[in-house]
Amino acid sequence: MPEHYHALGRIEQKPPMSNTDIQARAIQVRQSLETSGNAVSKIRIPAGVPDKVRASLALLRASFDDATGIVELFRIHGGEFAGACFSLLRPMNEKLKRGTWIAFCATDAEVQDFIQNDKIPQRNLSQEIEQIPPFDQFPMFSQQHANAWDKFHSFTHGGNQVLGAYTSGEGIGASFGDQAILGVLDHVESIVVMGAQVMAMIAGNYVPDQAHGVLDELTAAFMPNRTAPAS
Image 1 (cartoon, helix red, strand yellow):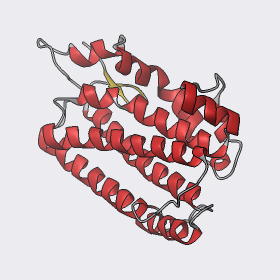
Image 2 (cartoon, rainbow, N blue to C red):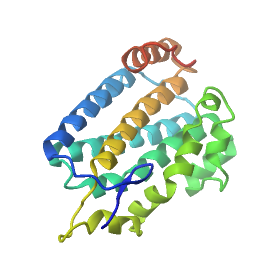
Image 3 (cartoon, helix red, strand yellow):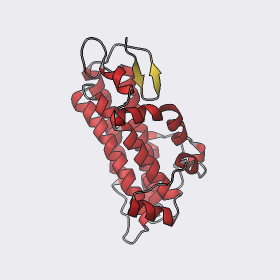
């Protein structure tokens, strides 16, 4: 029998959740998206900031939009279009990684090469990000690459990971286990909160009072027992 796939690895086959259960979890994650989005919307970046700031914030916002698309598909349709949600995971994660790298690691020449020629260095961007605080304490990017990149990539370009998810039983259609779908929603929630924190950290160099307020708001909402990261 075909196997189901969790966002971060292979899992045993389990009965699918009802669409109502999936939609209920998606509604919870949507509330986290709204909390994060409302917090970040209070930041006003002044005119004349460097290109790297505009580029990084654009990518981070685009990652947020991918996350919103995933959650809304689950909220409205349950698990019926879960494959489309899996296909959005890689773009969502890649935009978060690139936006973070541009903000904190890229040289001015590399930023211009990206803006003008759509080129990113063929290096391990995750490792470069995780050499600087506070990312050196949370190796999320490299763990993500090690645990799930092949599956993210496969769903995006139509690879063989799609087969097991669409040929379960006698019919043809999306057939994901409950842990796979919950794993996607949990992952999206964590990515959105992290992306909002990164945007506030970037803004801290230009509108520190706004940035500190946003970081405090996010910490109170999602990590009440921790100290907000430095902006």
